[in-house]
Length: 262
Image (cartoon, rainbow, N blue to C red; front, side, top):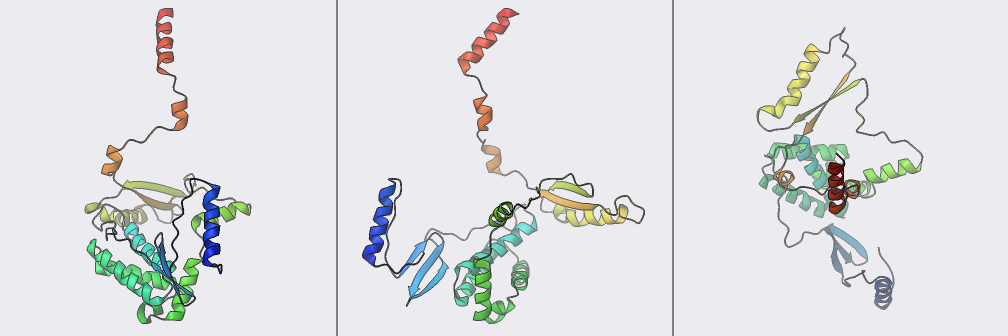
């Protein structure tokens, strides 16, 4: 939010806001530049300049390439890093510096250079912004920046669809007669190409002209291995389960009475 109020008027508005609720605590900072969440905002002669803000305790650790996760998850990390940089960086020079920083982080965490270049190239091709990558074109980057900055999120699209009265299909509905869902545990090593090999066998032995499965869609989905956190941490039971439990004394009294009646 920007304003043309004077410093005194801004302080007065903030003080009035803090008086409305004792739980509201506002740290007031008045300067040409400030940091808010993961964004750095600077007032450069009346022009707002934004960039990604990295905290002093920040460390370049992301999901390792050697972890037991499907490759599309590693590819999504690259895509997300570029989207975040394009949304927060107002200039193409700052975006390019963040892109180079992202490449270094990916290399440190074991991502192969070919894998990085492939998915970065796919990002720029998808958004028709190859000039940003090759020539640092400012006009093309401004279009990319505005497109991603004002692009509605998945939650906003879902809320808008429900508001307009459209029915949203439940993605967990697996009862379609022309679809077969197969879930398997993903692992690195011999099972890395399981999806590709299974599809090859499926098309070779099950999809032929007179087959009953020729119009059936096979969907392979991965299940991740349980982490150490999931093995050691037990979540609290659901509220409805806890509320249905009888008190200890009442349960003991009921048990004694049932035994006495027997």
